[in-house]
Length: 135
Image 1: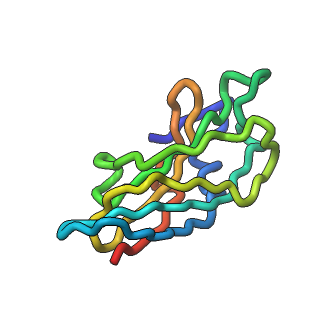
Image 2: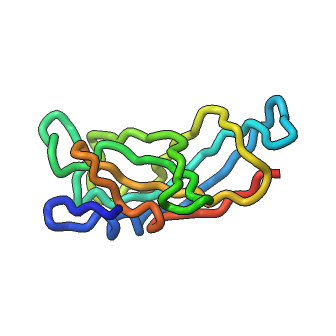
Image 3: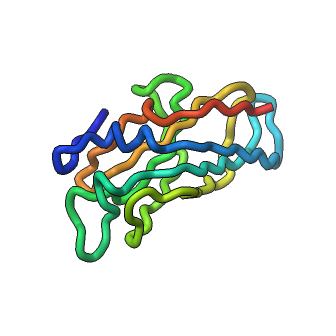
């Protein structure tokens, strides 16, 4: 679902999300999957919609949600969130977050990042994606 904040589409902003990295740290393996953590690194332009802060509490980016959308957008699974730094302004490069250890089935997974406002508006999760492979 694409949200609109201050007349600006969050979908346009999500297109600036750029680079994903996946680090697989195996723990106790299981026949149908094993535990891994996922690290995402991306760029974001807060010029359209600012980061939430003590002074800006509405029409702002509160956090970024990281999803596995392999089963489709309507069946997405939120893996973890990354809070928006309240001091962020303009284009911010290298925003990074790492999930806790999660159970992943082997194979390819489509990972996405979407911005979220305090009023629960979210950018389109399909606007910023990367494929990872779990072996």
